[in-house]
Length: 274
Ligand SMILES: Cc1ncc(COP(=O)(O)O)c(C=O)c1O
Image 1 (cartoon, rainbow, N blue to C red):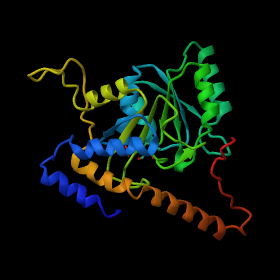
Image 2 (cartoon, rainbow, N blue to C red; image 1 turned 120 degrees about the horizontal axis):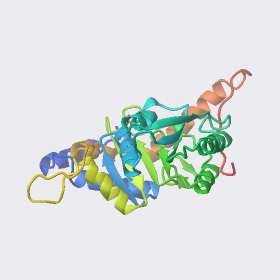
Image 3 (cartoon, helix red, strand yellow; image 1 turned 135 degrees about the horizontal axis):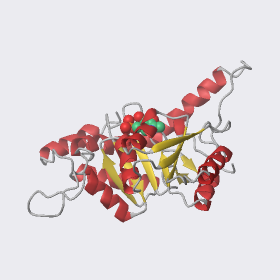
């Protein structure tokens, strides 16, 4: 922990905001927008929940196909299955270990040729390493595919100065215990589209209609982040740059320590020109 997390948690208790909404949630969302440059953010109960909401918002349902990488954590794929949709797996490129641009093109063209145009492209930035974003975004544009960026492991990483998770229609973040910053458990959805983020907040709070009584016209989810947990997030945002610096230091340490063993090589950070 960085130090100020308890201060924000105490604020939540002092003001009796012990709920899945409140000032810590609002401020944590604002912190995420400031840091990443995303126009809007919704703080959620997990990164998995954030991925699930992106698929719902894109109207992806049974039998729809989503292009996604083979090399990722299972939580990237599970929400595709929640929706009854079909993951179309694409292998990694050697320089980034993330989804290969040429194989992605092949997969999209193959599915189109077979009459099954994919509904979305899921890109993962594993271990904080950027996928080849400009090439993948160009591909997505050519085939009119919405891009979901799973940046669960990439908060604090940029590509050409732009935060990962802000290239696509949606970006998702995770604050699970093993991430660069943590709220113990939690996630966020990023987008420049205000309407989509508002719809995500609505779906994440059980899709309760604006009526004086309890009324629900569609299926909802209990996916919002607690105001107590968001207090941890606010404290963690204050130390995020330091955590990124330390991660690079550890990388450099291992690189140096193994430098005289020819069998071991390291995947370098993707250069801005690739
Ligand atoms: C690549 C990737 N995607 C998605 C997730 C899911 O995030 P969460 O654990 O917050 O649901 C994680 C981490 O757990 C992850 O590493």
